[in-house]
Image (cartoon, rainbow, N blue to C red; front, side, top):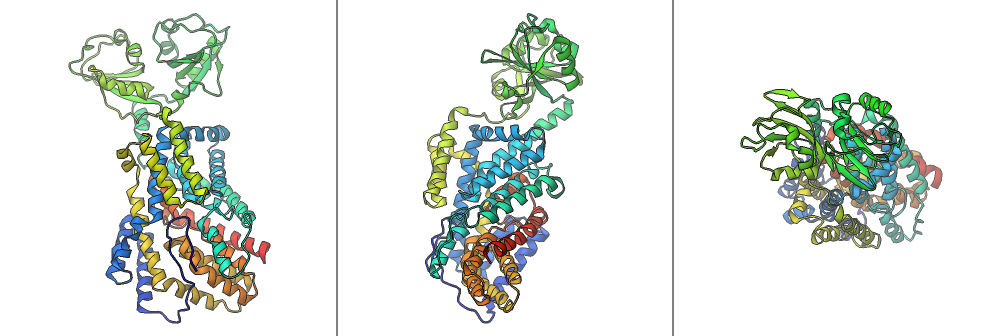
Length: 615
């Protein structure tokens, strides 16, 4: 029977499993390599990408596969798809598309991180029902990182649940994952009627909702805290801590009756009286950043303030101001658009000896000075302090204004300023991604569709080619590329069929539930070390034959294999887990712990769902 794999991990003809009566030396060797691989994964004696490379070179040296087949993983559809997805994800992030996706989730969750996480998981799960799991996960990867930053959580507390939700969402429809798509061909080969589109939906809904509830309730206790993992925003946190800066931004509106109306910023003395800095002022749709001392406060203006909550509260009461629940000056709240930086006074600067108020930093650079380190001492009231060579000024402002400091000979920018968000290219980025997704829904193979989308982003100048190379996580690429040959070796030597037939043989005359649990568990194990497509091709014919012998519906047995082929949480060998491992800073032990719990929840629910609904 010829089976075309839409996912793209393999596209080749597979023959029905041939009975293998005894273990051959080749089977023993493959199982030995598999055992060593598992041992290295569990003990973390080596990095997982190094383990994968060892597997890649060991298999041909042992004569288990031809040398040319050892490197098929590097050209496999899975690897190409992952690389393309990472490039498109970078394009969506740098154009601000993902910030628009994250905004409603953050508003829905409010100040409750668990509710925010549940909303994220539900959205990615539903989306994954009609597109490939890894595509949904890739789309929500930057969204998850943003949600983590806004809620002050390490990425490791957010990305794994999102990835698991993408995998669980693949069980919501018969087109949600490649194994379920394949069932139609496999059933037709046996002369059986194909399953309807939503045959698996009741089981998938339960699996997704239980998964969401599991992380919403137990998330903090079962998810790893990899807060030590470095990101571009860690420097911001370190700077805030080292300078003891109050990192609290609020937005207020000046009503007509406020005593601030008609008062200049200089006369209001908000810094001196309240310790509060004015970051921006918005009126009539226009925003002025770091307003000058001569700025006059007027009725209807919205002001973005930086200061302690209690100090801002005093300001609100003293001047009859109103708080804004939904900020209009969104840039001040978004770390990708604004932040803190350190500026060094150049040794030969023209401003040496001048007071800061005479330098007009706000008008000149459009940034707000917060603190000054002069002569080794920190100065908070520094407007009249003469500047010396080597003094360090801490500022807050838009990143585009902070980056412009590099063109000013009087200052040296000491801090890293993130690349600008190019909102003008957002429509192009979104169009490229949606076109790629639409092609997959139309039947175009996933690698071709997603690589076309990535190339389109490069041609439309959403992403530069050098940025595309940097966007790819090469450890992820080699992890997948190194393990794919192991799955090929298990099939070619007959190791997969041998193990499956031995297990099936033990079940003769067993209770139907015992048969279902064993088939589900065997499928789960197979999908950890070979593609879920290959595992489905190997196990579905055996499971259907076993079902017929035991008086069970063979279509139900095939559906069980298709569902449990998604039970890939224990190791980072699934494409979604591999995609999120580096940005989440995860280790194998994290998947063994959290993924193991998810596996233990998934398997009984899947088996009971098949038992209650189909048998």
